[in-house]
Image (cartoon, rainbow, N blue to C red; front, side, top):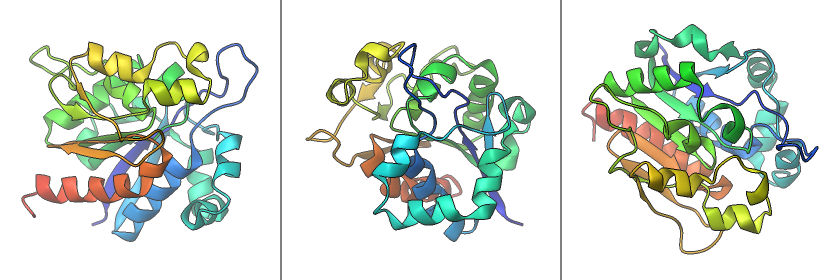
Length: 236
């Protein structure tokens, strides 16, 4: 039986009221999805609204030299899945079907996954059931309001990373964000860490929580999810 992993994409395609287009970031979906598929997992795609999840068009241009991303975007099976995502609400109470819940980045999640009740429920229940929870770049915003049964925040006291406030300022999007990710993670009591340089690779695994900082971290992020799943099953 194929093991399944749930990728939760954004349904949001606008950067505030700037008129700029956004959505899910190609490399941060393509790299881990490709790596995990090769390792034998089936990727199931969901989003808050279901249906077509908007792709950040700028991220396609940024990945023109990335073989996995180019192949992913040309893969009809993958494209059918991201164009016909399930609603996250379908999986409330079905968390045990998945080995991991994964939140890729792009700026879209900052607008529709921070407070999404269905996603929060799925993530909390999956983690409490011994599953892996993973997020990369802006994806960790979806973890910041996850509350466990004991009333504590999922990320409290955990070693995590994600798109840094300095990186947000560097791409000049900080003024468009409803909140800054690094700041919010720290507010929730997380032990936030980042690469030594802007846009450098950084992936952190803390038990069954895996986080990556930015697009450069996407390949190692995919590998780390598999390792965390194996470790959770008692395989070193």
